[in-house]
Length: 283
Image (cartoon, rainbow, N blue to C red; front, side, top):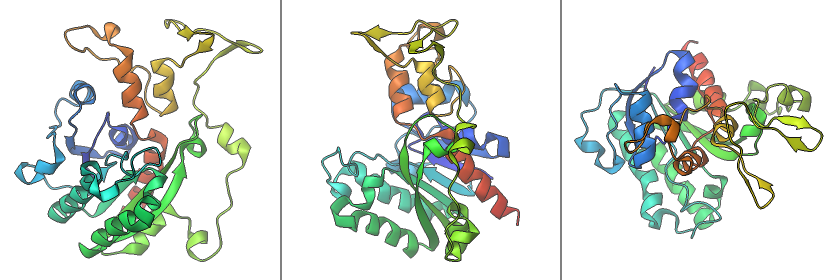
């Protein structure tokens, strides 16, 4: 599978789908630090930058388009301007890109607040436009804590398949759910057994430093380290510790690393979606 990624961030999709043998054809990221991370890890993949200029790109054919367009205009914490906000309009740019490249699959991520933005009309506009260009689709809210990372992170995922809504629905839902019988929920023991190592304890009520890292404590509050934030999102350790602004990787500032992880998708959720799409392609 060849995929194109927009609003790429530091590429949770590429990390998630690499074991499947999928190949990124292009990225689209404008922020400087995430762009530097992409260039560090994927020097052979072009980063076209501003997604609104996609008609000027010399991009190759793709089988899947993935993106999490900016969520500020759709979040409860935002101003709720929805599609009137230029950031919200990037969602319609995503639709225009899908119409041009016509990939077999599309995967779109956003905050759950998009469902109620502008009384639901914004999301209705998005999925209606997706349908108008030929995609059958399904959507579901998935929480990262049930996919192996120790954080509650609920996000809305839309999966579209060119010409077939059922195949899209089969990616996000179990067959039992599609037949009217809800699938059983995961047991707590199953979830906890898949949790990634993150915080380490040196005894009851205490936290110890990981070897090789200085844990920051401010006003009695123990802050997460960048490596722990990477683990919370399912990334490899020190994935965002790169040479930056003429400084060596060991001197990479932590602020941009925190921001990059905060804006990222959760890798295990993306891996689950990718595995389901992969299975459908092989059926």
